Image 1 (cartoon, rainbow, N blue to C red):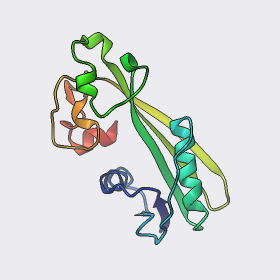
Image 2 (image 1 turned 90 degrees about the vertical axis):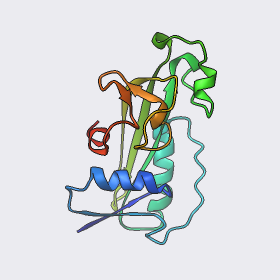
Image 3 (image 1 turned 90 degrees about the horizontal axis):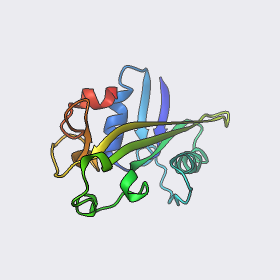
Image 4 (image 1 turned 45 degrees about the vertical axis):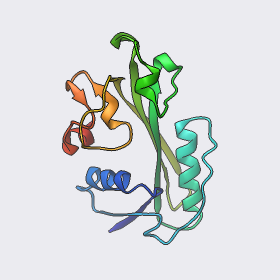
Length: 162
């Protein structure tokens, strides 16, 4: 079985990754489970930069495949900035100006040193209230028109498919 170390300390993120890759013949573990405890400074200028920074930092301590991600929201009205008080910062802003995307960049560092990076987005908008109990992070305020709900109201299977 192929061993993959995912560079995260976030249990929810690790759970999602394990669910997404459950049909693959791989053993996925966190860096902590792999016995790797390093401080990683995410000082890149893009999601892709930060994903690679994390993957390289962990790859320096193992001969396993390493995956890392960097993800977050880009809110158009706020010049692509996220924020802790997003709903309050968008008070009075109409739906057509609340457009946003959830961005996820994934980096892989392979045992031979080869590096791979990909970036995908989920388009939506910032809602007016928190809704849903599935997911974590920004999921309760990030709404998807095609589903008519927040990403925290999707089933784990629906969210993972996206």
